[in-house]
Amino acid sequence: MKAVDFDYWRPADLAETCALLSEGGGDAKIIAGGQTLVPLLAMRLARPALLIDINRVAELQGIAENGGVVEIRACTRQARALADPMVGAKLPLLAKALSFVGHEQTRNRGTVGGSLANADPAAEIGLAALALDAEMSLVSAKGARTVPVGQFFVSPMETALAPEECLAAVRFPAWREAGRIGTGFQETSIRRSDFALAAAAVHLVLDQSGRCARIAVSLGGAGAKSVRVAAIEQALTGGRLGDGEITASVAQVHDGIEAVTDIHASAAHRRRIAGALVARAIAEARDEALAGQA
Amino acid sequence: MSQHRVDLTVNGKPRSASVPARLTLVDFLRETLNLTGTHTGCEHGVCGACTVLLDGEPVRSCLLFAVQADGAQIVTVEGLAPDAEGLSVLQDSFCELHALQCGFCTSGMLIAAHALLTRDTDPSEEKIREAIGGNLCRCTGYKQIVEAIALAARRLKGANEPAPQRSGHDG
Image (tube, rainbow over all chains, first blue to last red; front, side, top):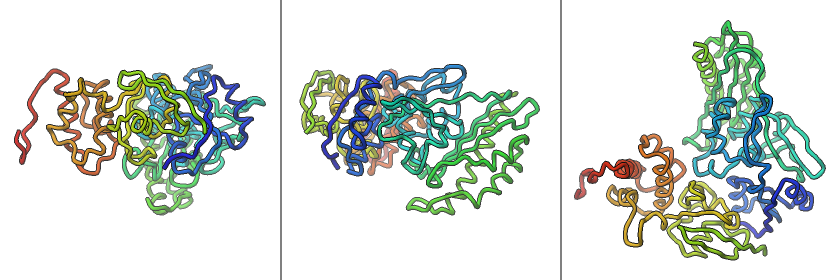
């Protein structure tokens, strides 16, 4: 259980990081928090020739807001994002999701960008990013590009990142709809902080009359990829989100929920959990928005 | 082989070494510095036995390479006791309430609990359980560990009290 030997480089800035990635080609790998990569190295499932340690690249650290868009730079620790008052105020759904990520010891080291770049379908940060229509900022020696989260996650553990690209930041656009925001995050795992058997994230706005002006529902953990559940979003937009409406909207998609069978749970079990969690997360978000209105 | 110089502080003492890039911090502590109080359990970030403080925060030392800790302040279980003879209040509480059996998880539990008590002087049982949620124990069933951390919290607040009586043990 020891990693194969590798070269190690600790670049001082983003330009040097990109230069090292270009030189390294597919044999170079970025290490941020290392909470997933180091186990893969130890088990020799990953054997990069060069590790590029971005932990001391100042441009990849920090959280900032600009024109309603909250930007979290890739190497920001999960613990720091969880404790950040702006994340709590502007991105309450992400704050809820972060509290489910790993344990204190892994959040102290694990990064927001690392979780996204790892693209585990059971990962909570990606699930929140999907509901919030986040945008990924990718940088290479050739320049920068922005990729919407829906296109960033390609398949399990695979993203749109090219071998020479570094995830620099994730940006969360503000919702412009007038009204009260509510958020819901629900997860089932065998023990708290284990990988999710299924998890649901909901972000919604209720207008002055209490109708749902906009709702985003994302579901992860159950299948090979986290997904937005557009059918539920369409069914509930404009409605009052009564329990009956929620149940009916979930029932119409239930049988189509993509789910996998593994040693932890069967696909049928995951589908049932997923449906229940989506319904609970919608009700949680509704109740939060209603309480805010009082 | 990629070899790197590291200068760091471990339990208050400056340490320097030349390490291969692939050497984990836990192996560096145990094998290079002979600080064997930190335990190597699963070596892939699941069990928490290797927990140490990195710049004051608990982290898994199997998920960090020694070269990455260059310049860092590390505290291991050997750094918790006030002197070579004695134990910390937290360690005493573990002994008195039988919060260990085989002892394999103990150093990680102590570091996680120490970090909790450093920032929260009056943690609820839920907070205690959350703080050690990343540490596996296969012997105790966790109950005595939770009780020992709660006792240490009360003692550290100044509310000094004897260990509670437990059936089957002399108080």
